[in-house]
Length: 355
Image (spheres, rainbow, N blue to C red):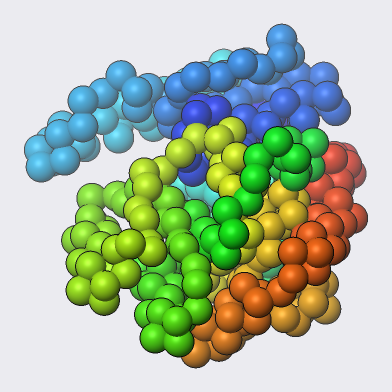
């Protein structure tokens, strides 16, 4: 089977989309040919049966305040997109769109005329009228969270998160820093790192020993929020305990997970961030406010969304565990990923669905 894949970026070093490079490698083992269209391409190293076509964002200068140029750039993207999906029509049997519903809205008429089945992966708590239209135009829509916006539709199908457990695993050569806490995500209000900082303030008031590392970059509209977080840390006299770091390539996150004992995720249940399972796969004790996890992992690793006190209490409990118990619990969390959310499991289920 030959498949067309559409995604935002193909770049193994990208802090947000770097994981998709691993997906493409795994998918290439199961399909005769992958044709990948992305908005932007960077550094990649993919098998010979994978062809990457870029819409060209990497070639444009970003003049955010010059509207005519932005409109021209978008028009060029659309024309290039239509050119590719028509030119490559004999090189794919089905279409798999990752996250960006715009591709569905722009290409569905062409694909219907060509008789191609169309599938979309969209896992996010928010949606709108155009999301409904995009889902209607798809044969199936995939998501990992039952609280995702698209999970409500009749053609929705729940999928594994897709973690490469061969890469994301415990590294015995990397020592975990005692009583260390990690937050790793794009720095934005929707990711809620401010909740963690408020919980850390409570731990400090109780003289509970800890250090915390916050990894991630912010997009322009969230820069003020990012800077305010740093100011809150400074005003709360947490500067010696809490450190901020730039976003890092997905390939480097394994080392960071292995450096920390506890990982915290604060996203809503509709998002089901893959970082939750990457950390679990590396045997880090993972705390999340995600309802999907009930019945899958021990409740001691789950707290109510936006509950600062609840998070602080869970952190206090985990920090107090013995070294042996931390190891035991970490192994149990990795087992959950292997059994339910591995990349191999995702590939197998996805192939069955596309067929």
